[in-house]
Image 1 (cartoon, rainbow, N blue to C red):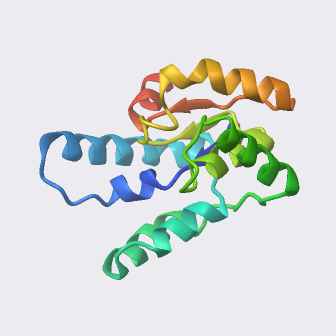
Image 2 (cartoon, rainbow, N blue to C red):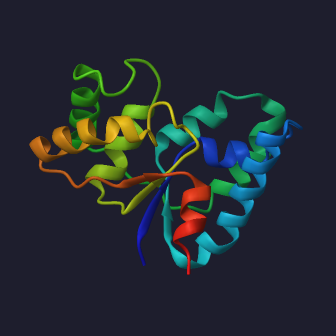
Length: 156
């Protein structure tokens, strides 16, 4: 089964309570994808996801963590730290926040996909060429960066 890295926006949107049509749609797409993903993929996450969720509102933390706590957590190795540093230095990812570490974890641990709703920093088609170039230089594979909606389109 393909290995899929789950980034912080997935549990956030799974339990999103906003009523704007786009937010409702993202919640529905996230839940629809999750239902089939848990059987079709090796779902993984990393320490940054837990750290980010634990910094969120206390009232929301339990539900967010209930979704992802059963998932295996990928190790932040020296290679992950080094790759994240390159992503930041090359201005591929913001200097602050965990996007660089999420991408590094998915790349170093050879995940087929990194699933996220972050279309600004991660699932951004305009950054893909730069990500490929840097990962090639680092000798790392490039996970497919996709939203749950895009992953639903991939399912038979």
